[in-house]
Amino acid sequence: MDNALMIGLTRQMTLRRSMDIVANNIANANTTGFKVETLLLENSPARTAEHSDGPSELQYVETWGMGRDFSQGALELTNRPFDFAIEGDGFFGLETDAGTEYTRDGRFHVDNIGQLVSADGSPVLDADTRAPIILDPNAQNVRIIDGGAVIEDGAQVGRIGVFNIVDRGALSKEGNGRYTLELGPEEAEPLAMFDAVVHQGYVEGSNVSSIVELTDMMQIMRAYASVSKFLKDAEELNRSAIERLGKA
Image (cartoon, rainbow, N blue to C red):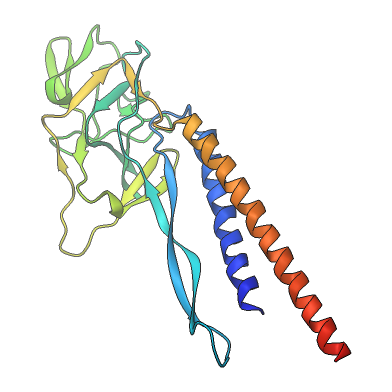
């Protein structure tokens, strides 16, 4: 295939992927704890077809990875006693069948056996013991104080696990605002943050800026239209050249 067509097609593929990501960001503008995502690109050099002059190497564009902005989302008041929001760094730890998962979505509740759990029933880990937090369903007063300590009728019964993940690039998205952490053979589990600021009766909103995402969407659409025109012009040029050669 012609070099120009190959370059144009690779650009179209990355633009389509970028559009999917922007659309997903907009769809999650109101999702608790969602972090805005960006497609990361890189140049991929390749040799050209054999020729006597001109450049000897072409630059294609390829997907390199996914970038996530973990900056703080706005704290939204809910007044629900088991909604929690982290101010600053850190992630809540959840116990799942697949191992520990991490999230910024603090919409919790107490299940029928007294465990503090996430919306899908995954137990919230205790910062001190890394075990599920057990609460008394009949307690009159449950509140959170400094460092995430859970106080039930005046007595501490646990501490909400907020864990510090230094290398956020090692987080793999699992869906529903959850992440798993890929640890090397000599790497330890993330440490609990005993100075974490946890707000009760709040949740952290998405950090998506709809205006920014809509602007990016329009830029992608214009870029795609431009590349499409380039491909059409290149195809017409090739057709014209072939017709002239055929008449020669």
